[in-house]
Image (cartoon, rainbow, N blue to C red; front, side, top):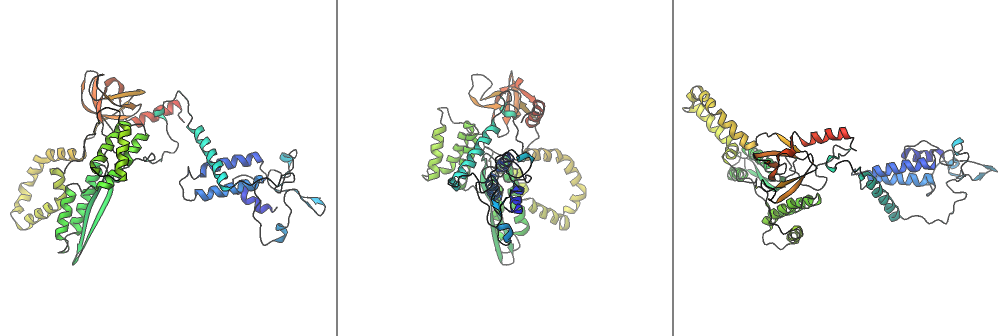
Length: 454
């Protein structure tokens, strides 16, 4: 066998020529686990997996290498330990190569001097099934962990894992996972001379992300929507529609909320999954489509006999501050006109400094109400902590908080109880002595560094 041809397969497995059968098998298992299509999402992983599988089967003798064209001297060399002109040749590569490490090994070439040629070849489906079984066994070993390590403290080796790896819908602007996402549509109008172009922007958003996208769409319309007589009225309609929060397509929102509820159910948070399904039913109404029946079936499956609990609605109509921000370009134009041509000339030098000093604190407060004040985080320092509807052990349990979960104080303490809000908008009461100031992610990292988490 041509040594250059076999050298290609050794390089595919990242091993040296003349490696033993055990080394070939270990190298193949390592690369197969890395490039398996079920684990590696790279578009080229499947082709890479097929290449290393072919190299492994050729090197261990399960498959013959493809015939080489061109040089007759290399193509006519016998395989394995076949005789040529009365002498026996040996492979320069492979488990049966000549050398001290293979001196006592039973000779067996790729043609298989003692190999049974009647051995049935595996089909492609059997090879894929065998590779999948090996992948599942390796995953089971990887997921096995010591009993003294809390599951909430486990970290993945790959820190760049996407936050929606479990199927959660993320906000397209802020990237957060919300318990009440919406599919929102905003309008952007562009006009020039005798043309008018209306663009619809659709995105899955959280409440804060929707406000930012609405402002962005309105400012684009202000800049480019009033340069045509045809686009004048559509531009105003688009700005007013964006100011009111955009539009919510019923079918798209029902489908998205159904996906979000399934993701919460897979993580074990069934009360929150039920609350999200209730939001999906608000968009479905009396519809009898396939999606509507799936949502109703999921709600019946999650029904535990307790009254359904809704999360706090953060999708409210635009407030006064939102309207002012959407219409601020108009106010700016009027203001500049008063300065240049009207009685506003004296207003600039006489009244503006006093107005700024007087209203500065009020504007700051309104901006904080719009953006949200910065709150100090706390994290749970117990294995499990009950989040209840009220400050008593007799109140219903909303759900159980895990260790290192981050919460924010939402009200005053009542004895041993304090009202908190979770990162996904849930509010309830917990024991005050179970909270520690700080971010849960940082505390979990410190705990894992000390206890050597995998």
